[in-house]
Image (cartoon, rainbow, N blue to C red):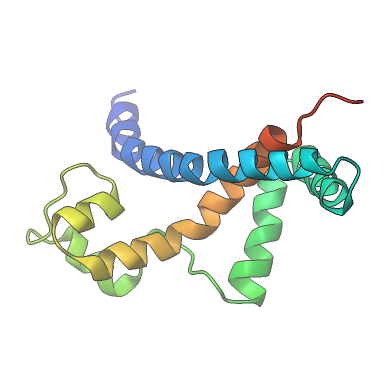
Length: 146
């Protein structure tokens, strides 16, 4: 129990950072896609969105994450795994990089390091998308049947 609280407190800012950014993506996209799907009921977009919503809500999130990882990280090599590239890992661990919030994107901006900010953001894109996909489908895909 002695090691639990420090580990939890160490990971909390990372979780908050991921949650905040996924909400910033989730809310506008979910509302817009729900409006577009409802605008032309039973249209092409509505059917497509309902199909994606059905697949993303019926697939367990860890399976969805593994599928997206294998497609975008491994096969397409679009996004980088991990929290930050190895070239910046040593810099953020040094005394020159001041960690204020524990959220890497915000701390890099507070330190005036846009290179670290963009690298951290590049590593967050895929987890944010994966986390948002399930909730995006339920927010935009829930509608009352006619």
